[in-house]
Length: 195
Ligand code: AP5
Image 1: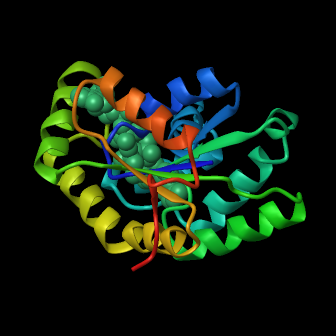
Image 2: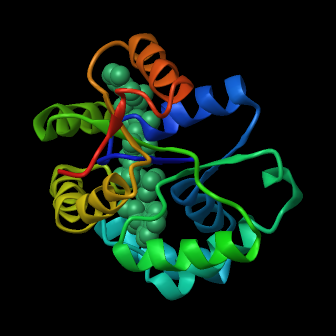
C-alpha cells in the first residue's frame, strides 16, 4: 500500500503504526534520504540540496533508490511506501517496478489536513527537532508542491478506485483508528471513486 498526504499530515507517524499492526515493511523515501544525508554519502549530498529548499529530489535519483529498496526480501510480505510517488511520472515508474515483480497495490491511503494546521504542527516539530526543512518559508513551499504535483497522484489512484481518504486531524490514536478502519475494509464506502 501507499500512504500519501501533505507535509505534516502524519504519514510517518501512521506508517509506523500500520507497519507494526500489519507486519509489513514501512519504506519512507524521506527517511532514506535523511539517512544518506546523515551518513554524508554522495546520494545524501545531492538530495540534501533539494530537501533543504523543500524541493523534490530529481526522479533520476529517487526512482532508482525506490527500485533498489523494493528489491529487498522484506517486501515479500507486503510493504507500505510513505512519500512516494509524489508526481505522475513517479507513478509510471512505480507501475513498471511493481509489474516486473508481479506485485500490485491493494490500497492507497490519503491523509488530509488543513494547510494552516500543518504549518503549526511542523513549526512545533521545528522547535523540538530542528529538522532542516521545517522553517515557515520551506514548509509553505512543500505544501505548494503537494497541491501542484501530488494532488494529481491522488486523483490518479482515485480513478483506479484504490484510494481511501482519511481525516488526519485529531489525536494520533484517533487517526490510527480511522486508518485501520479504512484499510481494514477496502472495497467499502471508504474507497473514493473518481467523479
Ligand atoms: P518527507 O520526509 O516525506 O517529508 P514530508 O512529505 O514533507 O512529510 P513530513 O515527514 O514532514 O510529515 P509526515 O506527513 O510524515 O508527518 P509526520 O508523521 O512526520 O520528505 C522530505 C523531503 O524528501 C521532501 O521534501 C523531498 O525533498 C524529499 N523526498 C521525499 N520523497 C520524495 C519523492 N517521492 N520524490 C522527490 N523527493 C522526495 O508528523 C509531522 C509532525 O506532526 C510530527 O511532529 C508528529 O509528531 C506530528 N503529528 C502527527 N500526527 C499528528 C496528529 N494527529 N496531531 C498532532 N500532531 C501530529
